[in-house]
Image (cartoon, rainbow, N blue to C red; front, side, top):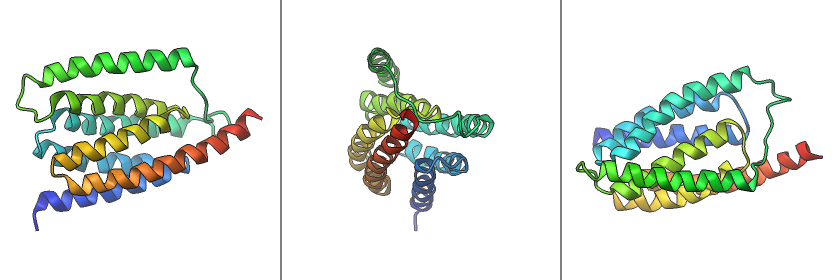
Amino acid sequence: MNILLVVEIVSVLLNIIFLFLLIQEKKMCWLYGILGSLTGALVVYSQNLYSESLLYIFYTLVGVYAWRVWHKKDDESFTIKRMKSAHIAIVLISGIALSIGLGYSMSKTDASKPYLDALSTIFGIIATFLEIYKYYLAWFFWIALNVYSLWLYGTSGLYFYAGQMVIYSGMSLYGLIDWRKRLKLVEV
């Protein structure tokens, strides 16, 4: 069996465990996210998805940061929250501008899909910070990113990752619903 295929399968399993534990707001989720991201970086790099491999390296580093943030926060004061509409607009406009810039930079390499790859990379970074600080909005970003990444990975021959995105889409929808219930409890 191809070693990269084995690494891809292991990465997918670690990432699914990560998301399952994240939905439950378990701090241990970040350990699985770190390991899943490290293995994932190797896989996407092998397919010349350079922005995506940078994203997975970023996920590894930010996983360490998130572990520390979640470990230091008091469970009662560290709750799910909403973001104001004006801030959402700023996040979206900034994300699009940064995606164009990264796409342009990556178009100077042999990247197979520089602008499309950059879009998922930048918005993946944004969604990660939203989830670290428990913004409910993160789940909307993740649903859109997972559907988009399903196409990106499928057209790149990363079929286990594409399958992971199908599972992630369903789990993200569940996370959206679950965190909405928890958000309502906090707002009462």
